[in-house]
Image 1 (tube, helix red, strand yellow):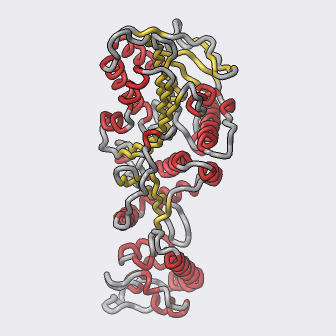
Image 2 (image 1 turned 180 degrees about the vertical axis):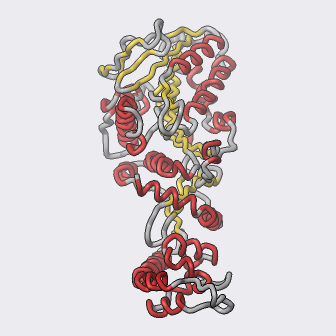
Length: 488
């Protein structure tokens, strides 16, 4: 936790430098590779939505680390705390679509092509469409899924086929702590069993509510949202502490049915935050993270060409979503994963975790399995010290070579002076430069007293090694670029 706090403090302190790095990185953006074929026909699609900075972020002087490159690329700058000076690096993630903080709910609904899914579900049996919102607590998952449901209520009735209309019904339940509860029962929160039988999962205790009008659907959805469990956590005062699964069942007159499923997953929390909650919240967080890990295993198994087994029995959540992982001749499935992330520097570790979680979903075959196992994905974009200007060089010295801070006017006397000018110097030359008064320096007010000069002398070898290490890293990176000229 201490390292995390150090990284956050370091990032806030060096806001100007990091933002300059992000602008520099933007200049080397490249167009993402073309998607293969008709992406909308893929069984699994991934989208990323970035929430705006909240008032609590602004009050904490937090700033955004996320830049969106439409139509489907996210650039995320991850601050770390390293002695070599590599205190931030930008990684690039591609998805089927990305939404910045200015994107409206209408635009999200349209881009996900949910209206077309409604049409297919109302017209033909044998479809299962699932939209799932994933991300840390407080990133807008419930806000987004609620907006989707609101637009769904309009489309379902405006697109109803003429003639003998299909029969509509709704189920809504939540999974928390490994147990399930009906959100529409009378009385509320009746226990629901989730069991696996040959070919499907069953839900003893879960009631279906018939729907005749749009008002019926609106009322039932609002009731389910109201009864869902929310609690205060370290990260969110009204965090949803359960997985909420809402299913619109469409039964066709000629037999067969289609389902539209909206899943609002419980907010993920890292253990360092979860342990700050009370014991009951800690237990909930452990169960939530277990279910999310099982979900990831099922999705990567679905994408792998060599792995025929999908471990959907691993959790109650994956048992419910079994149909989204398995294809059959009689029923087609489609899963849309909407990853919600925070741009705030305060949430940088959680944002990185979310982007790593969804990375394998953009890959196919065994590459998805390997990416999920090793948390690979995203292409690094490093900031090169050889390209730093005067301000970036000063910030590095203050951050990584603090004993040099009083003598910065000697080391970097003008705006043309940069850190690169110090690389060729030996320890003795570096000490001489730091100890020699610069032209115009007031002899009556020396930058260093005798004690500080002695301290600097004792640190000179260590600081020289740091500069040499940084220079070596830059040389290695230049050699890598020369060997791979097409890689940014």
